[in-house]
Image (tube, rainbow over all chains, first blue to last red; front, side, top):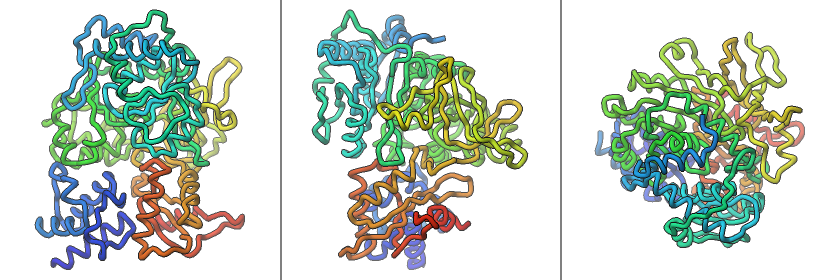
Length: 79
Length: 503
């Protein structure tokens, strides 16, 4: 299950950024301009659609979602 | 009817100096303070005996920014708002094209300018000076009030000149929308984006309070939703994209925002889905879809979206013209039972053209014998028997992404200029509602030593960040050995658009 989450999150991020982040799990997505604030909205919608994880936007603190690894952990914890 | 914007705002200050005018996260400035601050800036500028011409304002969303803008027009100079998030090259290019006579810096300038500069400390001092000049000749009539730079196809931005007369026409029309008394209006767009005029001047001229949502807050969703309920908003002004973000929060509804009476949307197409969601959350609200290019002063047409309008139209109309402007169709031809053509707007709110770019101006603006100004928008549409306008698309490669206007050719210019790129083109990816969801770049890279495509993308994005506005930079880069060509040996952009959108 955990591998499945990881793969799905990486696929979503690849759709948004065009990049395969499997070997760059700890890269900061915002500092590197790979994601902007409109992309994060898209990210949340995709997580909801594909993994059934509803993240209340009012709890979306960007600093806790700024790498692929952090996003994967957040999603795994929420499931 | 308002005759003069500056006099109207000043007269509110004289009648009711303690009335709140500007609220930045609880830091409130009154109309009295706004008058004093802008008078101080105007008087300080007047002492400098600067020649006629526009003043560039390197601006953020602070109270000092609007004091500087009003101070400039009070001293007889149009202002050019340039956002602090602008890349250095764009700053330099705007200075070169607009030839400003002075720069008011609200933050430290990142580059040396060829124009005399009032530093942030000097602006602060001017605001606090308490000075008043006796013989000012504020901007009036056909004189420029503000000049906004938009995307240009060759990588050179175009400065749209909006006169006092243009602005008065727009504000008077907006004041027929039955705004609440002293409206509390959301101000979220940066001042370099003309959507901001819809909250700032429409609000101030109505004695309202501008409720500022700084970019630093909107960038972080958690902060955004912590701040939004505290503004007690009555009038929402934004792009549909920004409203979509708000709608992600289930508590964004009439029960939690009881004071919200109206929503004014502009800057990009409003989808049926977004409008339907708004009316579901806020059954009593007055929701307006408005339309207009920067060249015609923010917006020229509007329609209230009701359940009836939603039921009647799968793709929403963009409204009926404001009374001082007219719309006509250029090169109209029959399509699906309608006469479809390029929307041409003429009348009081149409700009005189692009500053110092006569050839670009002549290409899209014209002046009738009686002096009426017209602008060919590049937007395709049709008009029904009631005068309701329907938008269908563009005649060129201009797109809207999250409300920002982007010329794909400008993006292509910067891509191809990048040292890591041999050839590059930007391609929009559309969603099911005809909206651009993402901007992609197809790139043939130069030979390089980057260890991965990710490293190459990072390097390209970093380079582009120095030369173009962040919202214009493609989100995704797709690398190819070559790009498809048309028979004329140009990149077949339409083929790439079809590929990306599975057509």
